[in-house]
Amino acid sequence: MRGLFLASACVCILAVGVICYFLFANGLPFFSQYSVVGFITGTEWAPLRGVFGILPMIVGSFVITLGALLLGAPIGVLTAVMMARFASGRVVRLMKPAVALLAGIPSVVYGFFGLMLLVPFTRNTLGGDGLSILVASVLLAIMILPTIIQTSQAAIEAVPDAYYEGSLALGATHESSVFRAVLPAARSGIISGIVLGVGRAIGETTAVLMVAGNQARLPTSLLKGVRTLTVNVLLEMGYAAELHRESLIATGVVLFIIIMAINFVFSFVNRRRVLQ
Amino acid sequence: MKIRKILALALALTALSAVAMAEFDASKTISVISREEGSGTRGAFLELTGILAKDAQGVEVDHTYAEAIISNGTNLVLTTVAGNDAAIGYASLSSVLHNDTVKALKVEGVEATTENILNGTYRIARPFNAVTRGELTDPLAVDFMQFVLSKEGQAIVMEDGLVSDVNNETPSYTAANLAGSLTVGGSTSVAPVMELLAEAYMEYNPDAVIEVQSTGSSAGVTGALDGTYDIGMASRALKDSEMEKGAEAIVIGTDGIAVVVNLNNPVEDITVEQVRQVFTGEVAVWADLAR
Image 1 (tube, rainbow over the protein chains, first blue to last red):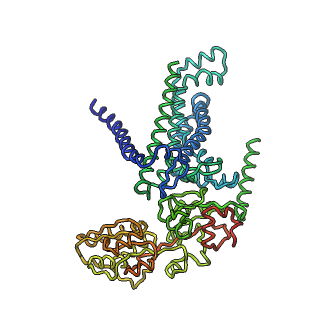
Image 2: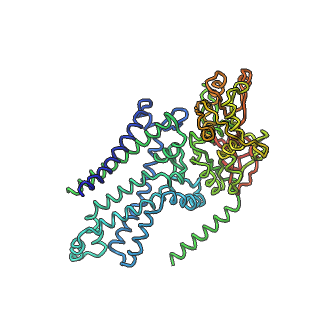
Image 3: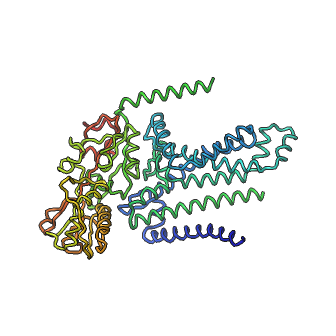
C-alpha cells in the first residue's frame, strides 16, 4: 500500500521535473542566439524579421492579472465571508454548487461569452474595439472567483468558533466580530486563495486570446488591446519555425520564472505573517 | 425602487445601442483585424497588397498597423468581423464563399469568386505552382503530377482552402504502383498542401517515397532548374528570367484571399491601395476611405 502512495507522489514530482527539463532544455538555447536583455526589455515583436522583444507581453500579463485581482479578490473574499458567516443554510446550499459550476466552465466558453457579450457591450458604451484590457480583466476576474471563494470559505470556516464567540462576548457586533476576529485568523488561507487566483489569471490563455485583441505593443489605455505571454505562445506556435519557435518556448520560460517568483514571494510573506 | 431605476436605465441603454447598430456610423474608427505572424494567409495577404514592402536597405518590412487586432484562425477572424460593425479582416476565399455572416468586398470592382480568381481578374490571389525543368521524364514524377491534377488530388487541394478548376472532365487517378523516391521542394506556403498530397499519393503507392522540403519559392525554382528537386514549388508566377532558363509551371491550385467586413457596412468595393492604407493604419476612419 505504501508503495502505491509513493508511486503516486513520484508521478507528480516526475511531471514537474520533466516539464521543467523540457522547458529549459528547449527554451534556453534561444538565448545563445538572442540576448536575454534584448528579449525581456525589447518593445518590438517582429519574429519574421528576427526581432524578439517581449516587454509588451510581460506588461500585458501583469496589467490584465492586476485588473482581474483588483476586481476579483474583493468580490471573491466578500462572497466567501457571506457564505461562511452571513447567509442562511438554504442560500449556501444554492451558492455552493453555483460556485463549483463556475469553476467547471471551460475557458473557451468564458472566451465566447466575453466575445459575444462583454466585447460588444464595451464597444457600444465605452468605445474602442471592445477587445481590450478592460474586458480581459473583467473576464479573468470572473474566472478566478471560484478559486478565491472556495479557498477563502474553507479558510474562514476552519477558524475555531471560539474566536467569533469571544469577540461577541466582548460586546462586538456580528460584523465586526467576523471582520476583525475571524478574517485575520483566516488570512493565510485567504492569501493562498488569492495567489491561486493570480496563478490562474496569469496562466489563462484561450479566453484571453479571444477577447484581448492580442496586439504586440505597449498598451496606452484600458480600452486598447494587449497581448499576454501565454497568448503569444498559443497564437504563433502553429506556424512558427526555427528561431521563432524557440523564442516562443523562451517566452514560456519567462512566464514560468515569473509564476515561480510570485509563488515564492507570497509564500515568504505568508510564512512571515504566520511566524509573527 | 433604486434597482428598478437601474434596470430601466440599462434597458434604455440596450435599446439605444440596438438602434445605433442598425445605422452604420462611418465616423467610427476602423477595427483592423489581422492574423498572427507566421500564418500563410497573413504572409500572402501582406505580399499581395504591398503591406510587406522593402525598405531602403532592401529588407522586407511588415507595415501592419500596430493597433491591428490579432486573431489566430480564420474562424476567429470571421466571428470578430461578424460581431463588430467597424471591423475589416481577411480570410482565404474558400472559407468565406459559403459564409453569410460577413461580406466579402469587391477588389478593384471585381467580385471575390472562384471564377474571377481562375480568370485572373481578382487581384488578391496567387497561384500555387509546381515547377519543372522542361517536360517531366521521371515516371514517378509524371505519375505524381498526374495524381496532383486528378480529381482525387484536386479534392485535397480544395480541402486545404485553395481554388481549383476541377470539373467533370478531370480524370480520376489510378494507382500505377511505382517505386522510387522523389524530392519536392520550395515555397513554404505550398509545402503544407504538397505534404498532404504526398501522403495521399504514398497511400496509393506504398513503395514510393516523396519528400517535401520547404525552403522558399525562389529556392524551389532554382532547385527544380539545377536538379536538386525533382519538382519545385512556387507560390507566385514564374519570372521571365526563370522561364528563359527552362522553368515551367503547372498550377496545382490558386490561393485567393477575401477582404471581409461586417454585414452592416455599406462599403461594397475597395481598391488594393485602400486595403494597404487600412491595414497599415494610414486610413483610420471609415468615412476617410475614399469611395
